[in-house]
Image: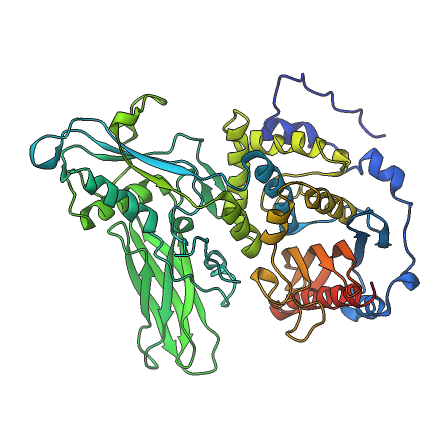
Length: 537
């Protein structure tokens, strides 16, 4: 017998993650009633799908897999293909479409983060500040560290934050400390030459939260990682390492050995003690440089040290040591800052550029940070609040909100569940909004830009004709020593060969991959399906 329904909380209360998980612990995962009522509707038979679809789905790799596909006319919503399109799927990073849409609607594409610096005392003779400098975090996702001269936030198709999982990751050329350097330059321009007090990072905008491999913080410098570029030497020699940003906060040591050609590169960064990064592993002599990252555990301490160092480069000396804990006991009461004591202000590029970065490279930490930003916009300051603040936005859309389950912003939570039909419904809704062009432009372009640059070949007919967000969720099958792809999806917009504009979502679930390279097969196969949609419509 199924347990009875969970009583809804009073409308004035907000459920915490702990309470939600506790209440649901004894319940089976149930398909929402509205979705169940439609489950038998409009299901294409396999034979009604294009032959290119059928050929892909008949591969031995997919013998245990399930496919879910929904393609619709963007303007009318008329289904073009519907193959189990209303089944719930493990969506992976396609989840980012939801907080991305809600935050774009809440802030607007032109919103700019403003990060100020305040002084707490007077400036006397010869530029002596008798007090502290306080850097007040604003939630700026990049702090100028990717800004290009022509006013964009730069990206590469394989972002540096993925460097520990793929050797394809590379760096953007911009200085990750550009925002802090800007603030330090402004401080110096006010005449301050020496700080007799301390430097403090005020990160009280929200409570810091450890999630996955990172800490969600309102201060983010270089995505709160240190980039480590490993270069081989001669066989038997220790490999060289260059890192950025350079800072007194960390010492870096290489224990990576250069080995004979043909061997695989293997490298990982660990911390053996505070302030010490050790990179271990091997790199073949004939291999190009390898990029790895080290995740910062305390973003406030990191930002404080980097800001003091930026001040020193501008000729502003500080009595306090740049190394050590952020002295939060020196902070004035929240909301007590006054404009007359502001000595610097860094203004970000428009929010549309942030969304472009998050979607183009599937930037996980920044996608989860959107949840906090949404909470702030609605008068809240916790991650759980931000997740629940997505719901009022969804209720303004034609989506059946009961058919959507979300547990985070990046698409890495078991609670993330929705159908291809729902994904296309969101895409169709956003296309009709005033900021619909911004939303579309932020998506990767198949074969050309962002994470989908390799989804189709250079000569594919759909190259450059479709913009889509992908998502992949994979886990280790220890029984067989293989990878199990729980879900791989691709959802976005396409202008077909006839000129017809479509919204599409293609998913495959439960695909065993004997080796890491097999993970890329469903990606290419979904590219083949996208090409078939383009050619046949």
